[in-house]
Length: 314
Image (cartoon, rainbow, N blue to C red):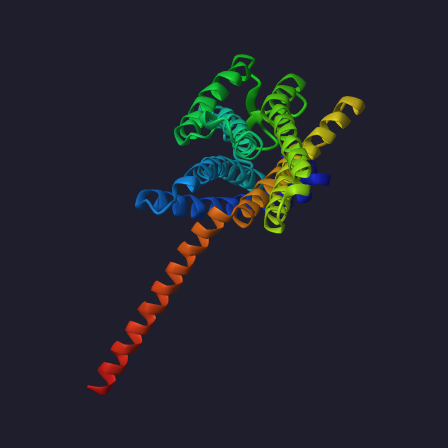
């Protein structure tokens, strides 16, 4: 349980995070279902498949991560209210899995950026634009993430947090926290930034010899880049600031974990929405599925109305 001065704020932060996670879960579930449906029915064009499969990887990982973090939020909620204890080996496995999935999610954003780099800047390298490459690559990255963060289990850095009521790396554990920040957040964001800087410079160099339509397309790509990088920075900046404060002051803020994860959940929610709005292929799939459901609903209501009229006349 948190100290009395921070109990109410901590409870509200956890509730906000729970709402954000549920919203992200719902968005990821809808998008993943629409993608699977279109892939199964073969309705995607050949040049759209790589973009869509990259989005599918991201949303499936968001879906898994939201299931794990939502269960953690519920544990915290019940712990704050009823002072329950959830310490178990399963709890530690879930904490370790949350770290692995988050790292793989960060790498999924890098995969998408790398594909954009090859498609826009280096179109001559066709071997980096193969569909099956981006199907297999996330599976390899997931296995590597399990290996990369296995030392956290060997160091016993993933353990039960009595104030949060779930298992994770304690914020004051500098070794474990820095390991996660560096490998799951720092390296992917740096690679992502370098790739997008290269793409932006290339687009600026090409802008003088392009048509108005091409310039608008490149402007849209640049906006997507800024949104993605900006939201990823929002995800990690509060945690980094609180970690620096912890090192300087020598003590951990009582709400460090809840503040960090609230901003992280907000960032993932923003990314889930922005991807739908900024990627035309994904937007078309989701809107097409929504319009079809609307049409089916209207048709069913009309059929019911006609049946009622017929029964009335008879």
